[in-house]
Image (cartoon, helix red, strand yellow):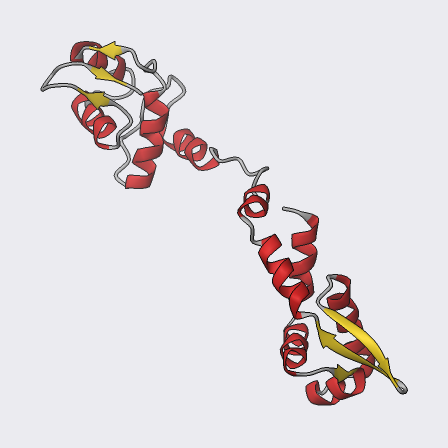
Length: 184
């Protein structure tokens, strides 16, 4: 996840900061006014405002003896658009192992010799097991039903169920009743 995204959300991950943003969305306030409205010490409000300013959400201008803070709505909209762009959201999960769930299911359901302990009843787990099994078939190579059964028998004795589920989940195609099977 990008550092900018984490910093932004950390800045908003406080109830008082959210209240400050809400108040500043209505009108500008000084530190003392915000402190009175939120029943906080001025130093605490200053700390929160510094965090919000760090991510560009608030800015201050001097009026007489006071700094008056206001919400930078354009910055908020721009930051929201940027942080929630498809590109940034995709980049935030780049280091996540997309096969972690499948790997866990396979570890739980497969013996050391590669055969299944049992065929999972839960659909999500079954789908993970089927993705594991379908790797035994070459892409775009046609197999007879007999050959498919021979390969599937290495995994489980109920080859008909496995065959049916591979086709049902779209992991393999079938032509005719008992005809050719293949993986695309």
